[in-house]
Amino acid sequence: MAALEKGMARHTGVSNTTSFQKKSRSKLVSIPGTRPSVQNGQLIVSTGVTSLDYVIGGGLAVGTLLLVEEDRYDNYSRMLLKYFLAEGVVCGHELFLASARDHPDEIMQELPSPIVDDVASRKIGEGQPQPCDTENPDTMKIAWRYQNQPRVQTTLASSLRFGHYYDVSKTMEPEVRQAAKCHTFYPLQETPATTESSLLPSPYHALLKSIQAVIHKEGFDGSTPQSKVRNVLRLGLHSLGSVLWRDDLCCKDNPAHCHALTTFLYALRGLLRTSLSVAMVTVPSHLIQNRTVMGRIIRLSDTAIALESFRGSEQETSPLYKDYHGLLHVRQVPCLNCLTCEVPNTKDLAFKLKKKQFTIERLHLPPDLSETVSRVSKPELAAGCGTTATGNKHLDF
Image 1 (cartoon, rainbow, N blue to C red):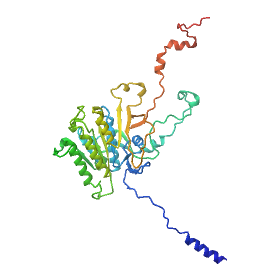
Image 2: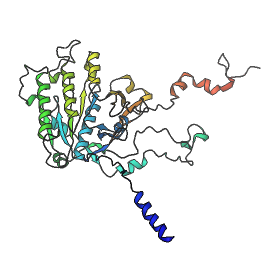
Image 3: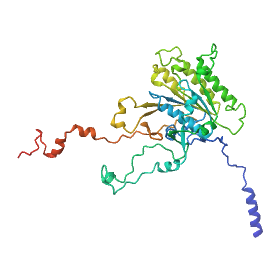
Image 4: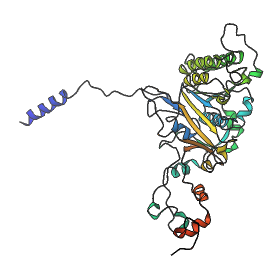
C-alpha cells in the first residue's frame, strides 16, 4: 500500500508540470535621472520643479516637447528654463541651449545651486498636518471645534521622490556646471544658411540643422552606439518667435512668416519622437497678436503651460494675492499610450518665489474680512444692538 502511494505521488508530481510560464516584464531602459511613468509606462524626466512635475502628470516624457508661454517680463519663464537645465546637470544629461537675446553661456552661469542637506527634512514636512499649539491663544482664529482640524494642503507633491531641489539665491558651482556636456547655439555667431529650398527663415533652419547634427553625432537616435551608458539630451530653446530670431510673428497681425515657427516645431517634434531627447521651448505669447497662430503653436506641442505674472498689474497690490507672484495655466497635457490624459485635480494654480525656491501651489484664498469691516463704521460696531436707524446710541423707551 505504501509503495502504491509512493508511485502515485511520483506520477502526480510528474503530471503537475506544465508548459505555462509567467510572462516577464520587458526590460526598461535604465538611464540616470529617468523613471517609468506610473500612468502610462513612458520614460519620464523631471523638469527641476517637483510641483510642476506633479501638475503635468509626474514629469516630462522622453521624446516630447514642453511649451512655456512667457510672462510679460520673462522673469519666471527664464527661471523655469534654468531649473530644467540645472536638473540635467545634476542628473548627468547632455544639454543643448539656444538663445537669441542672451548668450547661452550667460544663462548657464545663472543655474541655481542644488540643495542636498534639506531634501529629506523638506519631504518629511510636506503633507503632514502641523499640530496646533493649544497653549498659545493666538492660534485660535475661527472656533474651538476647528482647532485640531488639518490645514488646507496647498503644496503639490507626489509620494514618490523624483527630481531635486534648488536654491535660487545661489548659483551652481563652476566645477559642477563644467562637468556637464553642453551644446550651445547663438544666432549672432552662426553663419547664415542658404534657405532657398527651405520654408524656414535662416535662424530656424540653422537651429534645426544643429539639433539634428547633435542628435545624430551623439547617438541619441540610435544610429550610432553611445560611447558610455545611454543618456538623454535636454533641449532648452529660449524665446522662440521673437524679433531676435528674425521672426515677425510678434510685430504684425498678418506676419510674412506666420508658418515659420509652426513648421519648426513640427520638424522638432519629429526629431524628438525618434530620439532620447526632451525639449522645453519658451514663447512670448503676450506679444503674438494673431491668436490663431498661437493656438496652432499650442497644438503642435505635447505639454503647454502659461505663466501670468502679477508684476505691473492690479493683482500685485491686491490683498487677495499677497502670498503669490502669479498664476499658472495648464493649456494642454499629452495623451501617451492611453486614450485619456492625466488631468490635474485642480485648475486654480499659483506660483510664488520664496527666498530660495520657486514653487507651484493650489490657489487658496483665505477669508479676508478687512473689506467687510471697512464698510461698517466703527461707531455702528460699538453701538451693537442699541443702534437705531437714526444713528442714536441711546435707547428710546
